[in-house]
Amino acid sequence: MSEVKKRLTSWDSIIILLTIVVLIIASATVDNFGTSRNFTFMVLDLLPIILIALPMTMIIVTGEIDLSVASTLGFTSALMGWFWNNGLSIEMIIPLCIVIGAICGVLNGFLITVLGLPSLAVTIGTLALFRGLAFVVLGDGAVADFPFSYTDWVTGTLGSSPVPNVLILIVILALIFGIVQHATPVGRALYAIGANDKAAHFSGIRVARTKFWLYVVSGAVAGLVGVLWTLRYSSARADNGSGLELAVVAAVLLGGVSIFGGKGSLPGVLAGVVLLAALQNALRLEDVSGQALNIVTGALLVLSVLLPNIATAVRGNWHRRRLRQAAANAQ
Image (cartoon, rainbow, N blue to C red; front, side, top):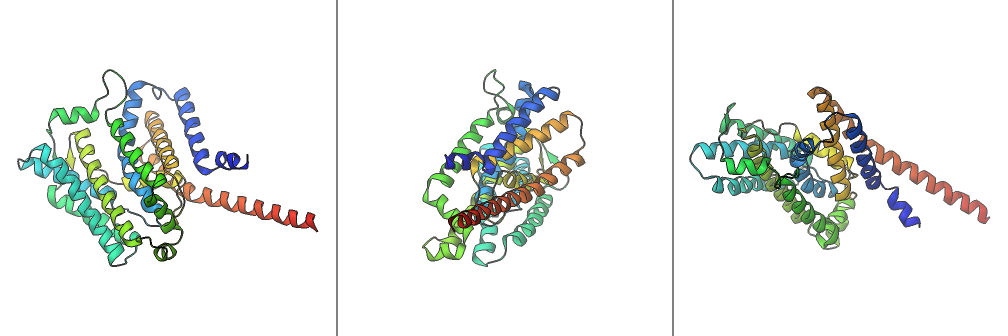
């Protein structure tokens, strides 16, 4: 029973419950929130956050971070427009952009795992680098007129249902990442690295190699999201995805992943993404300004770091008090 109680009072369970409550309240109080049309738009809005959050969760579990993901998205979007203007077929452009995103991850991984530079400093630097390269490639303009069959698939739904086609992609990738993180030796290694990377190294885990490939995967997923973003809006721009890294990190931390590494689960992160997307969607329907949305995102980011640590401290004090009481009773 104590194990059941522990699971029910875990941060993951609290966030999942809070997400359900917010969805119910928003559906009852916000006009058009509960409509099938809004459901479709909300899934499309959370698509970039949830996909980038999948590898970001693994990276933060290891005690690292990647703040360059939104700039990688913008860079691959700009390249997609440039390639399209120069006559490449969309069938060539899509895999090429994903590969270029992976190469951006290779650069991050090399600087962090081979040269030993701190991930925060490196990815702040590549955040500026990749965004700058995006403007070099495409400038301030936009490229549109991508093939209708591709843009229609990204924005379309399954038959006459309100379920977006891209939800299939979200489910497939979430299952893959979830299985790897929670049911394989690789996933167990991530938690060991986050808890103590030196101890993980001496236990035979290839710490540097594991972190390197996480950054490669993160870059590849950001490249894929750059393609999907461009096709959704049928517009390749160098500033696509600006500021998205804040929402991704907020969702991951809100989902219970410790910024210090070693803790967190994917179900909690998925709930955190849905919670963040639902709040933003409801506020937009209430005509709340973009600046206010940024305030909400920033506040959630602070709370997602603060509240779990307060909860841990409270539980620790309560446990120590019980031990002292038990010791006093034994005497």
